[in-house]
Image 1 (cartoon, helix red, strand yellow):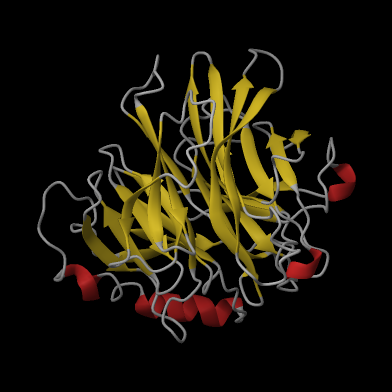
Image 2 (tube, rainbow, N blue to C red):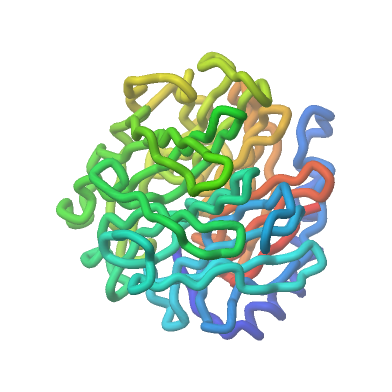
Length: 383
């Protein structure tokens, strides 16, 4: 949420000094429950800086590549940047590729002038970042002209091919400040689940409005052509959201899908989880794959406790959720039954410690939890 500016060298040095201590400090407090994924993970290792050659800052989105296609390499992590080198929020334009060994390359540098379609307001890349198995990369844009809430515009979703070239944009009234995203893909196509935070937010001038939405985008994936957007459906609505002088905007953020199948899923085989940041809870939407109506703000899976302004959210293969707190730098594990089973401190920089440092996450059962740390402009690994 909060973007702090330190020199990259100072941030990096501080991160290295803390990397072996932060997670270990909370390990003893975690119950030794073999069903949980967090308790055995006690070390934080820096992977790489997320700052590309143009100086973009404030890493938000994290997506792991599953298959090697074009410039995409299996096991690599893509990271989107929200701020430009001047540290203005909503002006970042780059996606970096980070290998497990820390090698960094530029996957895409986007410019409003060369996008293949409209994107109201321009480019400011958010936490909404997914990589489809068939090589398509989709990223959200919530742009500003000067880094302030007053100039936020609706933005769009930008579709890139496996070489990092933008091929189309999706925009319109139901795509309004795309903030985070999850994806489901099978032999029939793909479904994107996007949280939106700008419905009436700017006009409310700092007051909370219960208008945040989650939309499902149903896609066709032709064998030799770009994805085709078939429909957009609002499947959840009414989440509180507001502008913020430091965080730019606060509203429903992380979305995570857990499907109890790989292919041929029915609408009853999945749950969609939403980090309802302002209400400090994780919500559940049932039947997300096929529902044609809105579930409102969903059922509450877990609220309060160790949650503190949850932002990033990811589901493990076993159905547990990992939620990155925006308020205190903790990563919290929540079971499918709503129990808060474990937590790890990922960032203790600043006052209060860890405030606004954590956004995107990716869980790799073989390696651990990849997470971006905005206080360091870095990708780290909890393992």
